[in-house]
Length: 44
Image 1: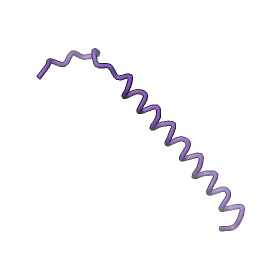
Image 2 (image 1 turned 135 degrees about the vertical axis):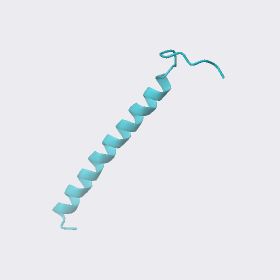
Image 3 (image 1 turned 180 degrees about the vertical axis):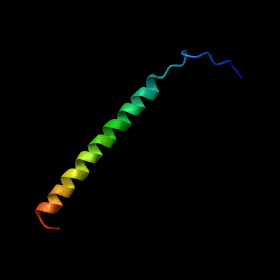
Image 4 (image 1 turned 90 degrees about the vertical axis):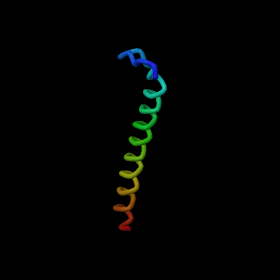
C-alpha cells in the first residue's frame, strides 16, 4: 500500500460531482416548491 501524503490527492472529479449534486438538489427543491404552490392554487 502506498503511503498517503496529505494534500497531494487530485480532487477535481470529487468537486465536480459534489457541485452537480448540489445543483440537482437545489433544482429539486425549487420544483417541489413550485408544485406545492400550484397545488395550493388549484385546491388539490
